[in-house]
Image (cartoon, rainbow, N blue to C red; front, top):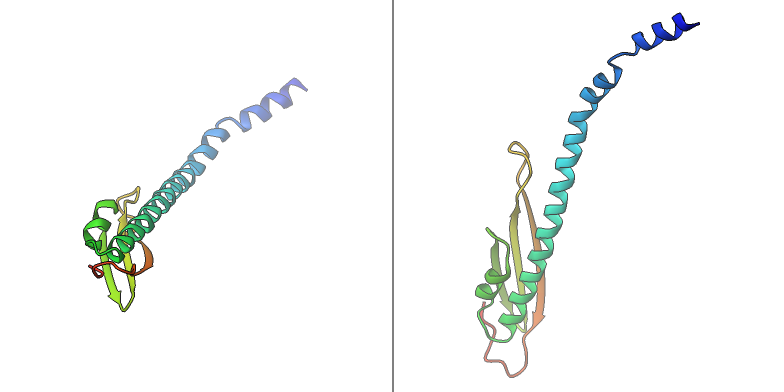
Length: 124
């Protein structure tokens, strides 16, 4: 009986190492994807906040693009358009991915505001 148990243990020797070697790349890929997703969500929230500030500033008659750039993440592109009594701001920003060979992600946020009565006029 002792002999059977001993041969079974010898047969399974190193199996944990093999399973770890097979599963570790998948675990690392999952970690990189998760960190990139969290970074993308944070960048998207910052884009929406910057777009909101840009639209509100332009609706008050202040330079909306300058205000949006102040609140936007690094490397973001801020555009403010005025059509009638409505101001729309859009902020697009690249997301830093954790991995050199991963495709570049770009997220955006958009906000609109009505031109405030009595304001000197919207400024993009």
